[in-house]
Length: 100
Image (cartoon, rainbow, N blue to C red; front, side):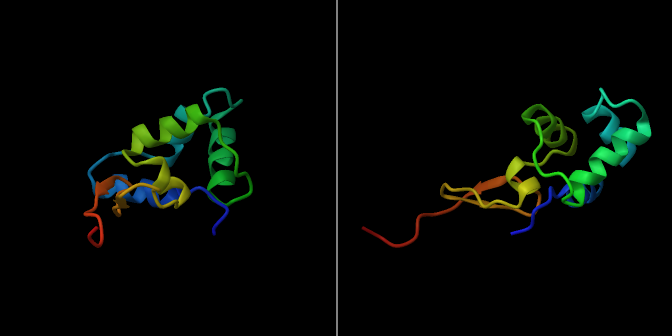
């Protein structure tokens, strides 16, 4: 399993959906306590490249809201319910397999 947060993929997906967002703007909105814009981008790159792996829940929430993806998509985790993870990171219900 990859040890990084799929930020690059989420940004690409958001752009395909027509969401106009720059990585720099995303970084500044997530790491608003960073000392500079450059520091915020470096922080985001560290997560994207697997250098840092633990992210605050509020930061994850901001990324998901801005890019319109599910946290499972960011962490490349399959949902544990009767759902499939679509390419966009959103869940879609599945039919139960087999019969009782």
